[in-house]
Image 1 (tube, one colour):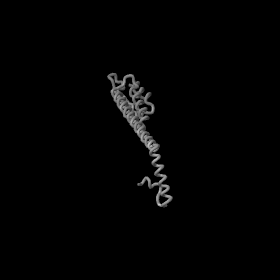
Image 2 (cartoon, rainbow, N blue to C red):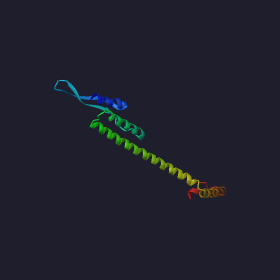
Image 3 (tube, rainbow, N blue to C red):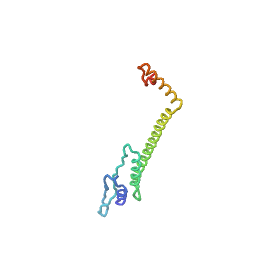
Image 4 (cartoon, one colour):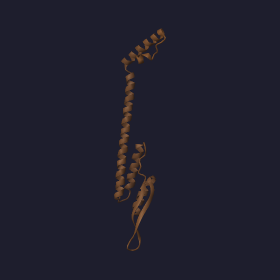
Length: 147
């Protein structure tokens, strides 16, 4: 049991919160034997940072599977960590798609203003507004956009 828990501690590093906590039983020879143990680790995700959560989840998996013979609980922790990793990867992919979509929208708006036909229409309207403005004194350049 000691080697098992020590493997978790050696691999866990900064994830270790406490441990090892061991449970003992007295054998027929009146000696105490370690029958189970536990090392508590921090299994929380990193808020608003999917990349850091992915790294942390991989560390959880390595820590949970560090012993030569992982227990059922070790396998559960590794499975939960793999799920956390997949969710963080999905979050990261979604953020990347959102960023591409925003870049595409910004790009299309820029392209819209570089349209030669639109530029000519704006120049024509802008020029006529300036001449009206100088004649009447009441018109502003912005009036072409509020009509």
